[in-house]
Amino acid sequence: MTGDHGAPADERALEHRLSGPGADLIDDLSKLDGDLVVLGAGGKMGPTLCLMARRALDEAGRTDLAVHAVSRWSDGAVRGRLDAGRVSTVVADLADPAAPGKLPDAGNVVFMVGAKFGVTGQEYRAWLTNAALPHTVAQRYPDARIAALSTGNVYPLTDVRTPSPTEQSPTGPVGEYAMSCLGRERIFEAAAATRGTRISLVRLNYAVEPRYGVLADLARTIVAGEPVDLTTGFVNIVWQRYANEVVLRSLGRADREPFTINLTGPETLAVRTTAEQLAALLGRDVHFSGQESDSALLSDARRCHELFGYPDVAAGTLIHWQAQWIAAGGTLWDKPTKFQRRDGRF
Image (cartoon, rainbow, N blue to C red):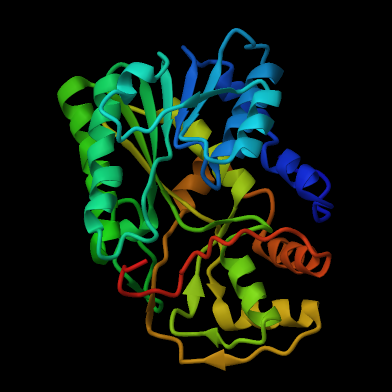
């Protein structure tokens, strides 16, 4: 989807843009063979992904199909926005043994459940959420198409002087969070191999929008007058609207031989240069600490771009939007990415 690339004026305009379906998505979802269930819909991406699916189905004339958003729904305001957008919200905790009986039937499932932050010292929580719950979901929906959100963390840190990992590169997760995410992939692969469940695995590296993400982290650090850590000196990011769309479009490619895709932007950003650009746009000084390491968490998403097109908003535009959002006093979420961590402990 292209169009006016001016910065969203407020949260309402931002969420409308984040949930705007492109023509290819509308065409893809017009072919859905059943309702859609989004598990873990209350997270950072889930609400706008659900609204995007609803809008795409409506524009395709598929008002006969439901979009069910499943979460514990601790945030009533977000749930209310989805209900107002004709997305059916379902309260369920997938860790509850009774949860499968509460889940609606569906021919299509997006699995967005994950545990990353705050599990150090309780690593079992990451394994329960990221690796055990996929087994529960695969048992509940053996005949559905399942698009499972994974992470570029399943790859090792890459020497920045060499090509970034493709989908064919060896995995090498660093830390138990990343290991548990590879476990998630293996459990869904087992469902494909043993039950014939159609699976897509989407390895995402750092979706961003003005309220959170790598750019928001850097901008907040600059505004606070704190030094920007350069130890992890390079990073991939991608506009969240595009990420939402790729996850939904991957349902159409889910297969018994799991479809795997790296999802991120085409640019590799230098943290130093990006911070300098943000500081200049914000009229602030920027200070740095540390030196760039030779390696970083990076992914090669060329296959994604060949299949689904390029992101509709480039990194340079996202940097300008971030500065404009901060300068206008826009809302920021207290959800840091911790992209600088190199030990896998988040």
